Image 1 (cartoon, rainbow, N blue to C red):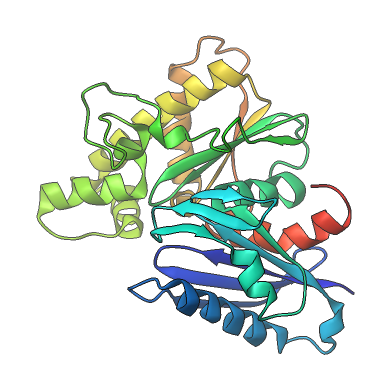
Image 2 (cartoon, helix red, strand yellow):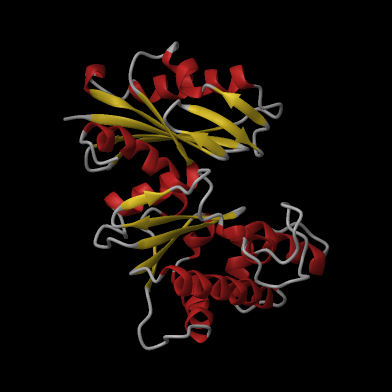
Length: 305
């Protein structure tokens, strides 16, 4: 039996998972990212987390390798994080540094693309050749998969779907533009709107639960976010004509309640409403990035990526 480790490096936490070839979870751990986000400290923490997960193995030589999912612009061939706004890192040779600490293969990937890898090879996207994966959490981003190939774009930044404009002149986005999908439909957008209306900080999970219970103003907040998200997905469907759109990320943990809301607006704004791309929740939801990272060593070994 072969095993691998997946790491999801975020701006506030590091998640790690040990899996077998079927991507069954054998161990899962999560640690915070230090406030200063110093490169050496964070990478040492990743190495320590990997060693903790490796202790679950009877034979450590059965470990195929480790995949690392990171936010930002990634050079997967050199194993370098070119730039990450979340971490404020530039040109960090992540794979080289970790290879000096641990003696097994490492593979670096963008966090959202890593989530897409999990769904395409192991989850809800397995039966499709042409699909779009959209992750909705603190932000919104996506990945285009065509004929089972991951389309990265000329600069490696394709499918930044959170920054398509769905309401010109709408709320200011962190990118500097106004009316971006991310500024209207992400988890952070809903939290911001809830704070504006209630003057209290409310988490995305609580907002969803209160909306499910039809509590004002949370119902309106979620409906508004779903409305713009449905428009965004309808635009994606018109441009790419995929077989399916698969949804992942933290917001997708809300399940069918969120999906049905989004789907109602998605269908309403379609041109070819009699023949729509399937709209599906991902298998791995909020854990998609770490699971995709865990799958990378197996897929690389088999020549599938």
